[in-house]
Image (tube, rainbow, N blue to C red; front, top):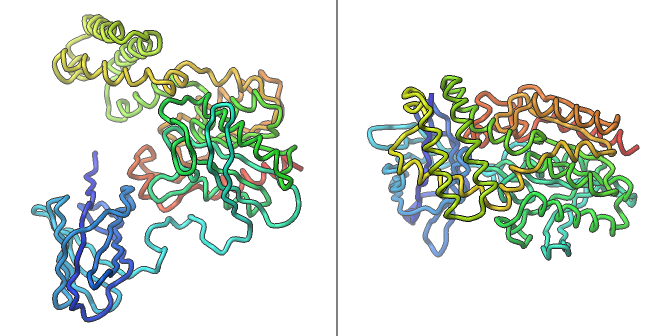
Length: 472
């Protein structure tokens, strides 16, 4: 059943200045919206005698939302929330609690707020907090090959030794150096854990994000691999890094960039892949498109029929460069496919008139003609895995709904055996999703954001112990 989520894009603004006691600070609570528990937080400040605030809905990845008008009279708080057509009404206890309700339409949802310590509202439990028993250095360096400036953070154990190091490689989409999703910062959590175990970690902003330059949207995984190469060169220039023990750790797309780089560089001692889609872009895309259909009970014959059309349209996106020819071919392939389908299949898969469907397909499959998709759909990662002679740790989550675990693990093992490489370990992590969180729904973005766990601690220990054994 599809759950109803309430995005509290609310505004809280000028509190009446006759408040009996200081209400400035952070307030947090959990809204009970039709059985769905959603975290909420207000950050209240006072400037020039006027109160103002911002709002967070952490479970939905909505942070720092500007707020508007609010009345505060005799300890009663009224917040008009235009964005959702509702309001919040609460009663302040003159100390650390506000009891009240969120109103929307005919709905009335309890939302009690408690005063929260600074930094307590907008962070997940595993997010690292000071003091840190290691050094944190902001660094910048150049990808001279493609003229990209890269910003990164190097965490390094205390001491004067030369340390083994891991370069983190993000998954698909334009990511910051922490691979942040909502309030989760998986790469920061991993870096903190590994650095405490004696391993330096370099985590890097993607192109066009943070301190990094470059055009992300015109780049492919092969281009991102040159950014990783630049990171290797930078680390080799540092006297505090053990040049014989430079490793790569990639998540999702990064899990195929890591072997791509290692197959082309003699400087890589080990790699760790997290949810790496070695089966390739086409098969991964098939899995991501069909799993929701299967989960919704769509018959196998309809799923298979969808795949036959999908493959024909993907092939057009990869092979046809001319725009007008591409659009005509999409129309032709769709109509040709349709002529062989039963009425039941068409009713299941197609919504709308042919003209609308064709236009939609021309747009959606046209998007696959950019450099990233062209590479992803054409590249066979198993070819590079077969070339690896460095140590390899492969980890995939049993409940991953983005990158299917068993098929990918089987192909990793088959490819590594072909390479003759005996220095590898392959693990299916039980009960975790694509982000290595323990999950119930497991494919839900909403659940990714809502879970308190950022990254399975047992898997962190496996990674750290494996790296330390490898670099001995």
